[in-house]
Amino acid sequence: MHVRTVDYHTAGEPFRIVLDGVPGIPGDSVAERRAIALGAGGTATAPRPSALDEVRQLLTREPRGHAGMYGGFLVPPDDDEAHLGVLFWHKDGYSTACGHGTIALGAWAVDSGLVAAPDDGVARVRIDVPSGRVTALVHRRGGRTTGVTFRNVPTVVTALKLAVDTPRGLVEVSVAHAGACYVSVPAAALGLAVEPAQLAELTAAGREIRAALAGSPAVEHPVDPLLSGVYGVILYDELPTVDGGLSQRNVTVFADGQIDRSPCGSGTSARLAVLAAEGRLAPGEELRHESLVGTVFGGRVLPGGDPFDGGVVTEVTGTAHRTGEHTFVLEAGDELGTGFLL
Image (cartoon, rainbow, N blue to C red; front, side):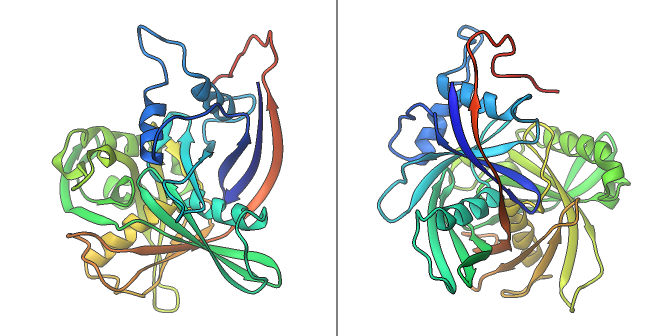
């Protein structure tokens, strides 16, 4: 097996773009391809994963990857209006949305020449993902990419101040669907702070809240059941305002205890919609959203829309940088196969 990738990081979170070495993925849309990929991971009666899932495992497991790895398989878009499609993946499977990945893909599409861009100005990269069509607005100056703005699918808030019983006590959470379902909770409500020294406790709390909300009507998507179920739990701290604007620090615990090193792109969309629903953030006002490692996204809600009915459109701006180009090999006779997770 030979798999060729180009790797980026978006505000510290990795994104591995697979260029070559992936078997064909059947389906008439990106969402359908994800559904097929989800069913190809092996079962109790057929435990061997598909060739596609072996590639995912190879890239997310040691010694070629790690439990925090994230990436995407490039696939055809749903129609000619988009430039590309992508199946997002992580160590546990295939996600419906990924804001930091969209930012990285926008930078890669322009930097690789796939999408023409001006030396100075903005290039628009349209990307089909399982939750719909998103846009990466790639900012350029002097022939270089200086940042990317991720414009998400509409984000809908389905719960504010929802009481959840956890092993740490009763807490109130908010729920928003931003291409994936995110639950927000102040870290202080759990006796925690968003600090690296408390990462183990933050991770445990995120997993507990996710488990407590399994099957709750609040985490059901109002339109598409394939987008239902908690994907990420956002634990956040309030920070002092910056130039009069809101500022928060968060850690997003997603999938099965995976930690987003960035401020989380789709998760930032969820926070923006919740803040708008709470009356704390007006359209056009900026949220400074900081990660556990100190990197920052800027986010805003665009005018129009209703966070409770049909959703609001959000924009999240950050930077992505290339970290390497790789050809990963699985040699015949390698007793570790596609690797292992610790």
